[in-house]
Length: 117
Image (spheres, rainbow, N blue to C red):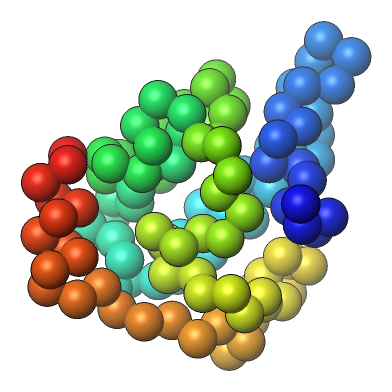
């Protein structure tokens, strides 16, 4: 497990929403919207345990889903949001995306993902 992404699966702490989880959700959403080739206009894929990256939702709804339901299991690499195995300064809050090697989805991948929505 990536220690820098442990927050994704530590949603609750002492019966309350973990502040590190909330901060991490904001970092995640900021990263996701910074990758326009992986969005559907103002909508991003929802990685909650119910939507499982199959639905595009407005960012506020994605945040709500993640707070209520948590992330889909084992989503340490945000591959449906433009991330590859290279990490970025975004995780430290710097907001730099230059460390990412993004690849835009190919036509077949887009077609398959759209068919699952």
